[in-house]
Amino acid sequence: MHFALISKILGLLLVVFSFTMMPPVAVSYWYQEGSEGPFLVSFVITLLLGLALWLPFFKHKEELQTRDGFLVVTLFWSVLGLIGALPLYISDDVPVGFTDAVFESMSGLTTTGATILSGIDFLPKPILCDRQQLQWLGGMGVVVLAVAILPMLGVGGMQLYTAEIPGTMKDAKLTPRIAETAKALWLLYLFITTACAVLYWAAGMTVFDAICHSFSTVATAGFSTHDASMAYWDNPWIDWTATLFILIGGLNFALHFAVWRGRSLMAYVLDPEFRFFMTLFLLYTGLITVGLLAFEVDVTADDALRHSAFQVASFSTGTGLTSTNAAAWPGFIPYLLIFTSFIGGCAGSTGGGMKAVRAALVFHHSVRELRRLIYPNGMFALRFGRHSVPDRVLQAVWGFVGVYITLSVIFTLLFTMTGMDLTTAVSAVAASLNNLGVGIGQVGGGFANITDSAKWMMTVLMVAGRLEVFTLLVLFTPMFWRQ
Image (cartoon, rainbow, N blue to C red; front, side, top):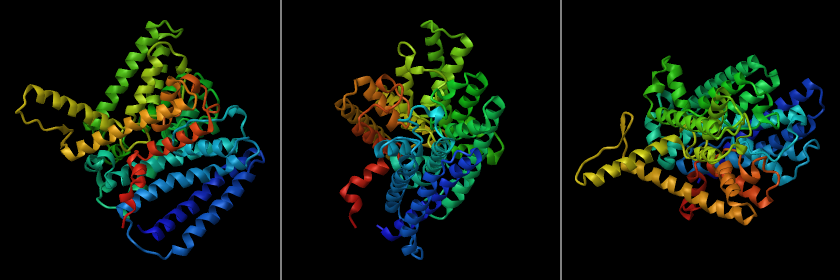
């Protein structure tokens, strides 16, 4: 383990992250709200801490190894989540304790979007800007992690994904080429965010709300500048714009890059994960639209389709923005929405959950095993798109799914021990592990009233879900720390 190199990288990350405290300061001066103090203090603390970690080792040169990579990416979210809590904890405008501040910060950075705050409409704009910005930065970090790092670490079946990465995205080791990948992704991410903000503004949002919600939408995160989320506007144009960009955020960013580079939409059509994800989206939307009309919910057919498409896109990608109170919908609908978050978005996206590629491989593998029961001596190759899937990848995928389900069950039981009913406990697991951010039952209106122990468990699950579970769990194995 190269601890000097890890300290150097972490210190540099903190130095860079300290400057993210400046946009809220600028917003405070622009709107003359006088709320810049906590951000200036947080800037100084973060900068000094980063320099303390970086300066002793800034001349240290070693190649980052795979084992170091696991620790670096875990520290990235853990430490930055704690640092991001500083402005909330220091500010007098947000009366929250340490636990709530860390919960809110980690929720933003992991693009979970679960909140303990209420009266959001009346919070100072610098605080609102900081919450939205945390999500956007976390979303970009997620994309770089998913596209450039996790496939190389071989986490949970993502070895297959390495074969799908186009052009400069493809590599076998942790090398400086990650910088090329990150640059390309930043430009693409910024372009999509800008397009989303412009369309929100054209649909009726203020400039501030349009920028803030573009951050939340493209990052599939879920924080809003209003307690009512997107229902604040009740505007079909805003809802359909959000649905479109949530789906874009939930798709593979390497695939977006391939389309951008090739100037052709055929890359989407030819991608098996895209087809699987969109098929599920259309199926869920159809089921919920029919369900709303069948239960005679007081909506027109157009509104039923609009809200169904919005909520399915939001829940299935782990975004958590809401166009209406879906938790109050009758029958099976809220439970189906929670279920969609377990499959989640595509690999290489800002979406949460187990990822559509894994669900697709599990489905195809199950079909293959059924065929083997009928033809015991048959030879059946499992293909995913243009690639034949090795058994080693299938084993990794099944191992990941098994661990994911086991964690869900264990934490559901732990949440019930804190006083939650079973529906709320399952919802809390989905909200955190799937990076969904919204729930049903006792947490349908937010997470402020759950116990501190439940908040810390949810915080751990947020990080675990964001890091594809194995990246975090491997740190707790004795073998990882042996020389």
